[in-house]
Image 1 (cartoon, one colour):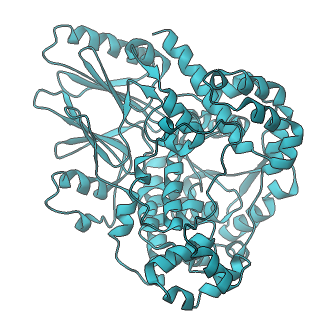
Image 2 (cartoon, rainbow, N blue to C red):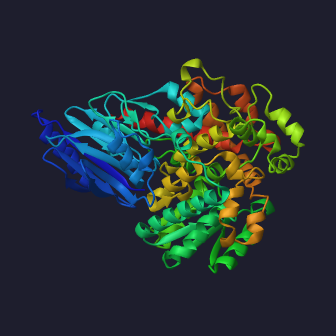
Image 3 (spheres, rainbow, N blue to C red):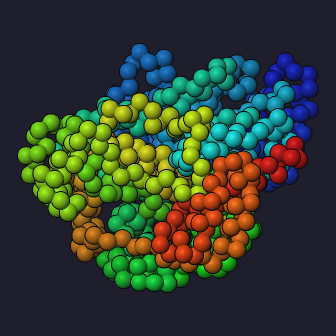
Length: 581
């Protein structure tokens, strides 16, 4: 993953030059390439996917920057005091931050791109203002004096892992959120982009126009990633979403792809090789299928789950993460493309919430829609039962995740939500869940062993695709009849017919159940006698029951257990880091 560090000293502080030079020396010793941006500010960068710089008016953009083919600048009010920055976010996509320097060459303002793929963390220490994409140990030791773990945010992260994509779990440094402008002389940031605004301002499209918008967005994204990606690899899970990415990649950049990679599980539900073979034959590519990595769950692997400023929720399967990092490095891969994010953006599942959204937008005409019976059949209900269930007062569809059974009830003081989830209660439940899925997708960009080895890209979470999907009503994305129906229609001519029509998905539940069951001797003391338990956040009785082979066999809970284990690792790692500051 690309890493950058910017250091800006106050021109008025006598000690500033010496302190800045000392930190620059440390950055160079850590392997970073350093460039002076002004007399008072320098930039240090490292790879993989080393950031580049691009000057746009008063802004220096740092990271990976692509021009939009069809920027929606016309939807930005001209009287907005930050219209220039908002239009810039509309014109450029990728993963980047923006920095504006004052007349004295000091950092005066920050901007973060819409995707959130490149973090933007800033803080002050003495005469220095620092901005970085992550917080390595050497940087924390030198500049992290006074930082503290925030227990309320830790609790919020346990109950709502999506919140970890927003504010840091630390007091001291602050994160600039995606699509946000931060004047460093002001305390409050200015939100320039929100998912709900994309939807509210979007024009209506016919189904054919909507399908074309998805196709164009995916192709635009893939073309940009090919241009800057170097030697490529593509993950092929056997499902629709990774198939869409692979098909677009094979059309536009086949010669750059060194590896089409699939990992298959040990049981029939986790073995997608027949679907991978079907896709490979259709696209004329050679897929490499390897067994999913297995091994023991150790303390070292639990510690590796949280490698940076944010808890490591992007790679909860540490064995798989390490195995693929090794394979990509051995193959000389620069950039890996995944199909992650498609479930949220293209809409999976097509449940009762989809009908509620449609009814909110069209009223009683939703009952007469020719597609409504298809959605009812998809949910194994009659149209009347669907309507009666969905329209009852206070209806809420099934949440993305059930409550974590390992935790004590959430305290009121810990009610922290991602800003994108505020002020959207007027939207239908399925559109709200799509936005929640986008927030979750931001967490996929956190550091992992793979991101240390290669640049990991999620095209279906890139700005062109995200905005194309957010702009469409959920009813249209499902065509009122099934999950990801519009995406199936849009890419039907590129994929095998059987894959487009497929109703099932690969399932790794049994595989992960065995992994956790075999690692209980490590997980039980890690969670029952760890720092989260000491903080009073773990329900010891319920956790003791959940962390047994019997409970795992009957109730599952892999994601909850590993998410909690990752946050436990983050707390332990940061207590250790901060003890040495």
